[in-house]
Image 1 (tube, rainbow, N blue to C red):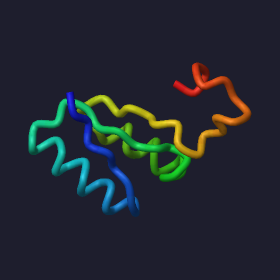
Image 2 (cartoon, helix red, strand yellow; image 1 turned 180 degrees about the horizontal axis):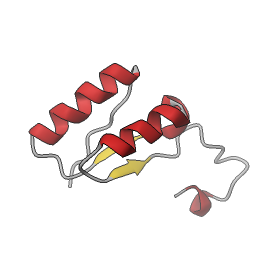
Image 3 (cartoon, rainbow, N blue to C red; image 1 turned 90 degrees about the vertical axis):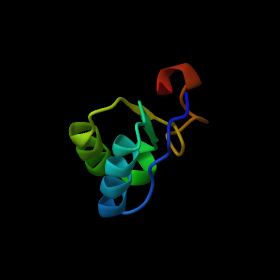
Image 4 (cartoon, rainbow, N blue to C red; image 1 turned 180 degrees about the vertical axis):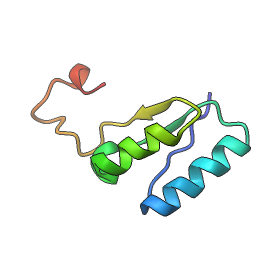
Length: 69
């Protein structure tokens, strides 16, 4: 399954989410620490598909990778 990555300003992410959902995406991918946690929360709240959190900039050097997911 392909999950499109959503990145950018909150408005751009919202538009990309709408585009992905309209195109039939069954899930999307986003990096909470790159978007910011409040923007990521809003993305999850608005999405009608699962949002997969990518651990980019999530502290993988200090946290066990298994705990990031």
